[in-house]
Length: 99
Length: 492
Image (cartoon, rainbow over the protein chains, first blue to last red):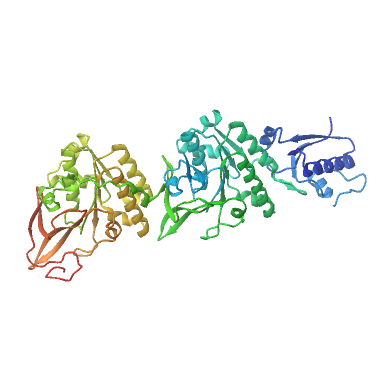
């Protein structure tokens, strides 16, 4: 089982959805190597899951593990800030984000 | 339920009185912004819009809450005697919890939209076949997401999605206290072609709740502020005072005033379904007129209601007994209902509603209210006028003969503030006054106005004894009891 687990909530195939997924994957790969899992939830198909967590904005990314759970809203275009928000370790290589 | 006027279809809200001022209800398949200050009743308006939709029109609803938790709202609904749990179980009502309280503070990194919210609402609407949606209160979205322009755009998208799904929606928003600051976030221009404003105003140290429709794009509605009240058993009630009396019937049947001599003065009695005001200074005999009138009804087996705002029940019964009327016995006969209330116990609107409840429950043939002037203590001038117009119109609508007493401020002459408001819509004004004649205080009575009737226009003397009122001769000399003309030897 991985140390880090994320769930990305999106609403369909939008630019924001794609950006968020790409940024999250890049961020994890760079900082967590392969010690992470990402689950993607499309609210258009699984609205009950959004209901459970009272998700209002998309993209919303939840850090499920390690506890405590954390939530970040946005496409994570600023990798440095996103990493801080998720409490990720320093990068293996310099981030490519706008940060 | 659906009423087409001016090209825009309206749907009845079911909210008591609101549909009258909205000329049918809210514009169908559109979003209406309901803006109001804190505690102005926005949330309740939304809750009732949904619940009445289910109860009266079989239209399921989705309630999206941003501030109060669903469990708090369920408590509110239960307090108003609505079976919210039952409606949720039957799948007619769905809450969408968009409150922030139970979720951790979100950090925002980069761009986002409110697609999740729109998708959740869309899914809920579809799953229960909702026709009505309420979003309460969207102001908190603006405090949660800093970019107001962005939120506005998202609400616009939401409005479009709701329209596409064929729902009629209410979006509530908190506004600052200033009178015209309803566009704090500029939402109405983007989202709602229809704007309703609720106000909770402190005026002359008295609180008034009003509702006003600012605009219904392309659809007619009544203008101006209307009083409304919120009562435990009935919820949100708009009092559309001057609209209640539109269907007035004019009966030519006479009913006894309870006094054969007064009957004679009136040309055979009061008209059935008319509103009578009895004006006079303290102690001149107004309450006696009221009791006489009620007793005459009870004697004929008519159901009668007497509201007393001036005297306690015991006082009233004692006074009546001194004139030979046994009120407790009349009550036991089942034809009389006495309701004594202190004006200060409730707001004017609440008095209106509780009186309306009693009247609807007992469906009296005769009604007496003693004394309207006592209500001046809990009302502003405008509030009292609305109350009086509303009450008289309401009872006329029910074909009730109603008698209201009103106390003049001075012992002689001069009408009271109350009469100025009521005279235009009353059919008959009985004027009772003290008059000074040859160094003696006498009692005088006359009829100031009586709907299309040949009646006695003279000023007559009257006296009161253990059997009630005795109308005597007309005063011979010129005597001006109304304080209008400075004639004769009348006014002190």
